[in-house]
Structure formats: C-alpha cells, structure tokens
Amino acid sequence: MSNVSLVSVIAIVVFFGHIGDSEGGDLSKNFYKSACPLAEEIVKNVTWKHVASNSALPAKFLRMHFHDCFVRGCDGSILLDSTGNNKAEKAAVPNQSLTGFDVIDKIKEKLEETCPGVVSCADILALAARDSVSFQFKKSMWEVLTGRRDGRISRKSEVLSNIPNPFSNFASLKQSFANKGLNLHDLVVLSGGHTIGVGHCSFFSKRLYNFTGKGGKGDQDPSLNPTYASQLKAQCKTLSDTATTVAMDPGSPLSFDNHYYTALNQKQGLFQSDAALLTNKESSKIVNELLDQDSFFTKFGESMKRMGTVQVLTGSDGEIRKKCNVINSV
Ligand code: HEM
Ligand SMILES: *[C@@H]1O[C@H](CO)[C@@H](O)[C@H](O)[C@H]1NC(C)=O
Ligand SMILES: *[C@@H]1O[C@H](CO)[C@@H](O)[C@H](O)[C@H]1NC(C)=O
Ligand SMILES: CC(=O)N[C@H]1CO[C@H](CO)[C@@H](O)[C@@H]1O
Image 1 (cartoon, rainbow, N blue to C red):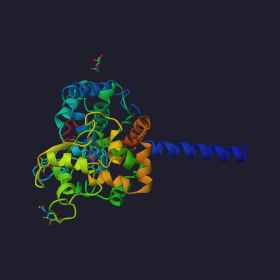
Image 2 (cartoon, protein in one colour):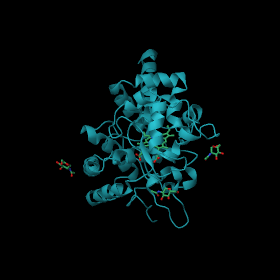
Image 3 (cartoon, helix red, strand yellow):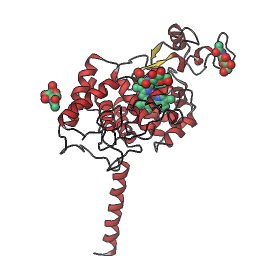
C-alpha cells in the first residue's frame, strides 16, 4: 500500500470513528433487536394508547426526558422516587408539574412480562418522549438510539443548577446547554419543544406586573407583545397566582409544529428564556430558519438525538431497573 493510500485509510477510519461518537457513542439503533425484539413496538403501543385519551402527555414526556438528560445524563434518574434519607430529582421545584410517571411504570410492567430485566427505564423514557409526540403524525418523528443503562442516584439538590430556568438570559441559556455538550443550534431548536404544553403563571407573571421591580401599573416587559400581555393578564390575574397554567404556544398548544417560532417573532414567547432567543443575532437567524416546518422537524430530530446521548451510562455501567421508580436492591 502506498503512503498516500495508507494516509487516506487512516483518515477515513478517524473520520468515521468521529462520526460514530458524535452520533451517540455507545448507543445504537435498535439495541434490543435480539434480546427483546418487540421492545420498541411495546413502548409505542402503550404510549399511543395513553396519549389517545390524554393529549397533555406528549408535553409531559418531552419535558421529562429533557429534565432526565440535563441532570446526571439520560439515566432515568428523574423517574426515581425519594426515599427515607434521599430527596430525589422529582422533588425539586422545576419538576412539580411533571406527570405521566404512572404511564412509564405501565410500559415497564409490560416489558418485564415480555423480556424481564432487559430494557432500561432511561430508554423507555427516550422512546416514550418520541412516540408520544409522534402520535399526532402516526409515524416516528425522530430516531432514538438505545442501549442506555439506568442510574442509581437521583438528588433534588442537583436539579436547579442543571435545569435552565425561565428567567435566564441568552448567555446563561447558552452556557447551560454548553455544559451538556449542546450548542447554540440545539438550544434554539430544542426550545421549539415549547410548541406544546403549558406553563404556570408564576414563571412569567413578573413580565406582566412587576418587570423592573417597581410594580404598579404598566411595569410590563417591553419585549412582550402588548396585546398578548393583555390576554395573559386575563388568565394570570395577580402576581401571586401560582396555580393557573397557560398554553405556551398561543396558536396551537396541542399541535407539535413550528408555530412557536412564528409566535416568538411576534413577541409572544411566554418566558424570558424564550424571548431571550431574539436577543442575539446568531440565535435570531436560527429562529428565522426554523420558520420552515420541514426544516424544524429535521433539526428537532437531530437535536433530540444529540440530547438523548448526554452523559449516558452504557455497557456494564449502572443497571437495568426492575421498576422505574426504585433502584434494584443489591
Ligand atoms: C431552554 C431552556 C428551557 C427553559 C428555561 C424551560 C423552562 C420551562 C418552564 C418554566 C416550563 C413550564 C413548567 C410549568 O409551569 O409547569 C416548561 C415547560 C415545558 N418545556 Fe421547557 N424549558 C426549556 C427547554 C426545554 C426543552 C429543551 C424541552 C424539550 C425539548 C422543553 C419542553 C417543555 C415542554 C414540552 C413543556 C410543557 C410541559 C407541560 O405541558 O407540562 N423545554 N419549560
Ligand atoms: C401493537 O399495536 C399494533 C396495532 O394495534 C398491533 O398490530 C401489534 O400487534 C401490537 N404489538 C404489540 C407487541 O403489542
Ligand atoms: C416586585 O419586584 C421587586 C423586586 O424584585 C420585589 O421586591 C417586590 O416584592 C415585587 N412585588 C411584588 C408585589 O411581589
Ligand atoms: C412528581 C413530584 O414528585 N412532584 C414534586 C415536585 O416538587 C414539588 C415541590 O418540591 C412537590 O410538592 C411535588 O410533589
């Protein structure tokens, strides 16, 4: 072999080796193909059955997967219950509106009947997030690599520093994504998850009533569309309302689409963290690119796939839980 072709062989190996890494490291496509061939179909069937009677579920699962991945990686730690001497991630304030844990448990029960001890809870959540959102389209909207293992640790105290908060500015949002190996593009694209679901008044009512802290009439966030602000005030009547929820995408809260970006450009992003995406030139440019629906679907799938690989446990790390809400006893 000549030196030139040897060099190109090495270059190709290095190149593809690298692609392998960036596309999910040790995770693979259809990891359970031989150990549990029906695994993905079972997750999909049970998920679809529940979404059919609970249209809020896709938003719940999408956010649950995000919160799982951002604290200790996508290791199912969000699913664990607190125990006598440990407050789990679930117990932290940002998680208070997460629901659907019972559905994850039902999926797990079904999988344990078919192939006990094989399918991780972290994978179930990643698949259920995809399948619940995909129900509307009756086809899978993105590829989910599998082979995650379940973590044995879940701490409430680790949540606030890892989950970005809705009062964040652009720099801190970018930083919290960078901390997970995700870039600006991922930040803007994944924020599109706010095309479905609801937010509590308490996460944005400051923008309506007390933006500068002076309070009083008209202390409103100038980056919020005034007409939209009036509509929000009709729903969130006081600064102290912590119970009411509002659709995050005013036009189509149940439809997974790219309308979030249209709303954003009309100054109708609900949280300061949404509006913040327009305060940076590069980020606004990405917002405009995502006004194309097909492009949004493609990019969202790519970024979800990347988010789904954050700090995953694979191989013989962690465990395969028997029940998703408790670690296995040793
Ligand atoms: C960029 C930083 C982000 C911030 C600051 C943020 C913040 C929030 C907040 C405060 C809520 C409202 C929770 C409530 O009031 O119950 C929410 C809801 C939601 N978020 Fe995010 N989020 C971010 C990124 C993401 C990402 C990356 C996804 C998924 C890809 C996502 C998906 C959702 C969904 C689907 C809901 C609705 C949940 C429901 O209907 O119960 N968010 N987010
Ligand atoms: C999943 O649902 C489809 C359609 O209802 C059905 O044909 C299939 O047998 C189900 N698969 C499993 C593993 O339950
Ligand atoms: C408005 O914001 C300021 C500054 O953050 C705070 O001190 C004040 O208590 C807020 N007003 C109300 C009514 O919560
Ligand atoms: C599902 C769950 O455990 N939610 C908890 C989230 O955090 C709040 C406040 O700490 C708890 O009251 C909820 O029970």
